[in-house]
Length: 167
Image 1 (spheres, rainbow, N blue to C red):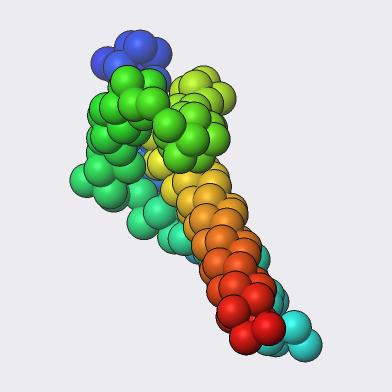
Image 2 (cartoon, helix red, strand yellow):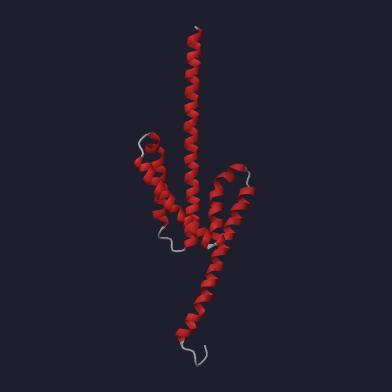
């Protein structure tokens, strides 16, 4: 600090450098986490199963590591779609809306509420991407299971009808 500068001016001049330093530390940490997850995924004996379970974490780490305002803004804008979907599901009657759509949108909006206190917008976007991929994967798995059960019941009913017709 020179004799002509006040301490206030020095601290204001250091703030942008400190913010930039913090930004690069956060990028490095997220990048390191992404590389470690990729290394674990492809180096493990589980093969594709590890990729299936670690893919959401890798996507979230990439969103955090990129630290792009447009990506974080796009993730934040998903909330509007979730709110619209929740309103449509609340207005609908039926088992699909009651047992699938409402819980799905409710869980996704709960993620938004739970992650709102995270101060860093990019980290918040990464956590949201990870959680949304996991929730969507669980929802797809439940839908596929329901379809398989329905197909099995229909095939079983057809077999019983065919046997009854043949006798």
